[in-house]
Amino acid sequence: MSDMTAGPALRRIVGFALPLTAANLLQQGYLLVDSIVVGRYVGVEGLAVVGACGPLFYLLNAMFIGLGTAFTIRLAHLTGGQQVDRRRDVVAALALLTVVWSAGCVVLATLLVDPALAVMGIDGQLAADSARFFSTLAIGFPGIFGTAAVSAYFRGLGDSRSAMWVQGIGSITNVVLVWVFVAVLGGGVAGAALATGVASTAALVVGLVWAARAHPVRRRGPRPAVRRELVDAARLGLPLASQHIVLAVGIMVLVAIIQSYGEVVLAAFTIVSRIELFTGMLFLDFSGAVTAFAAQNLGAGDLARARDGLLRTIRLTAVLSVVVAGAVLVARAPLAAVFTDDPATRDLTGRYLTIIYPFLILYTVMVVVHGYLNGSGRTTAPLICTLIAFVGVQIPFAWLLNGPFGIDAVMWAVVASWTAGLTYSVLCLRRVLFTRPAPEPVPATVP
Image (tube, rainbow, N blue to C red; front, side, top):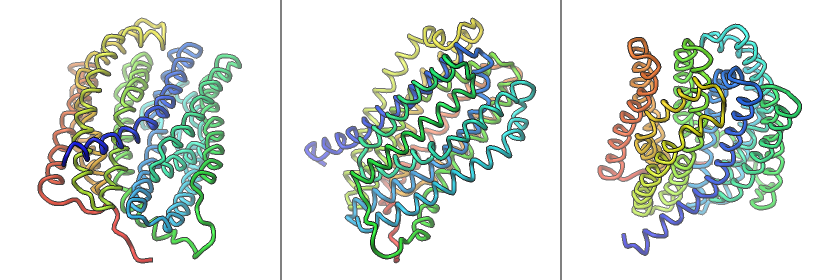
């Protein structure tokens, strides 16, 4: 492929990823602000509550995002194949899934939060505060999942700028509300949860109005083939959702290990997870851009362009990961100090960052490779990678070695997991790129 062809491929991926990155940086920025406000106005106990509930929310939210990604891939494939008339079927199926999922998660959050916290070893006042936080957050589930669905729709059409504005509005609103509800009104961690729900609902309303104006869907015509699209989405999305289930359960195990060291360690874990999410978002967005780019080009039959875009994206993100890691390592002490004045929590946060961030490049390359594998329809490969890296390496590493080596074993387990995951992902990528041609992501079905 000539540079004349390859250059536009990378520019297309970057052009798709950067608006999403801007939106997601705002989103992760509000999570950072949320944690800073909780840490400053509620204390280490508040950060521990957020850390205890993190795996539960991640389980529900990430599973939905995994299924939503299937609709993104489906829409991108139809767009690349010029099958615009079938968009209505996908939208109807996505809307139905969102409504059912939101209602089901509200019920689950009400009934299962106490048993789930008990499984992680969370008890006493921390358990009571965590249950109150999560129950309040559940009120906003329709807005949270609805906004994610609208964003998946925009991304599938290649309109990442609209996804950026919708997510950005929600994030900025959340920053304002968390300050008002927690710092001004003294609502504690429940106030932070309420701020998230209200802001997400506002973003959903804006997103639905904008989607109807910018990308209207034909309303008249045959009855939408919702069942067919749900089956196709389940076939493509269940491996992605299963991957997040594994991650969530694994994080619950880690929380069970970490909470035995006390609230200070759990608070430090919460701070590091927020920093990881914020710095990793750029690379996750490049992964999502590669997914959509690969799906569109494979749908159009341009295999060479899809592959070249991937390789160029890997080179770019590898360089960016070195820059990001260096910045975090230099600023690790001030970063920890922003969240809390507690010296023990700050020192532990700095040590955690010092151990894992020199190896950030392993993670960034891995997630970009996963983006191509997802876009090519091989969504089971990232799932297997997660099973190997997280379940087979990180959890046993942390569980077995935290006794003799203490909490540092949990930190080094992250590095071991990234190493194993990247190794497996590269092996899968070699088979896809050089052994056999990639299939279309979603085979067309007959109505």
